[in-house]
Amino acid sequence: MLRRACRLCPAPLRQPMPAGSAVRGCSSGGSAAGEAGGFAKAFEKFERLQDTTEKKEAAPQPPKSFLTLLRHSKFMQIGDPRGKIIDGKVFQVVGNDIYVDIGFKFPAVITRPASDDARRYVRGAVVRLRLLDTELSTRFLGSIQDMTLLEADAQPKGLLYSPVRATPA
Picture 1 (cartoon, helix red, strand yellow):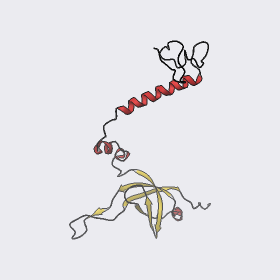
Picture 2 (cartoon, helix red, strand yellow):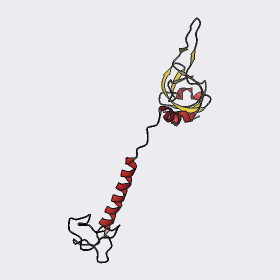
Picture 3 (cartoon, one colour):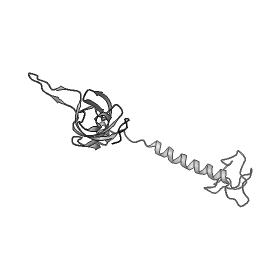
């Protein structure tokens, strides 16, 4: 294949350039053995990578439907969350009620346990829970529609971390 100039410089070629070579026959230099130098090899490699990315970009994939995206989402991979053991972070304590952020639509509300560790359930503590229901909703007396309490129901299984240190026994 005969070219007027090599890829690296505008100088004319002295001899025909075989395919796959970047500097062979270049009047501006090159190695005596006819092999491409380090820069020429890197340049060829970059050019090949650029050609493959252009080919991939040329054929864009059709957009996926919402149902396909939803079906393959991590949220759907969880399955039914009822009965699963999860970890949550305490974000508010009111009396004996502890509000725990579990990462769902509503926080879980648990009662403070009657154990010695009860004082360690403070804001910032990490709690292990068994999730009973993600949304407490029911029809109240005389109501036609369901009413939600804007909270999830869970059972406390233990304390994983607390900013309050345990007192030595």
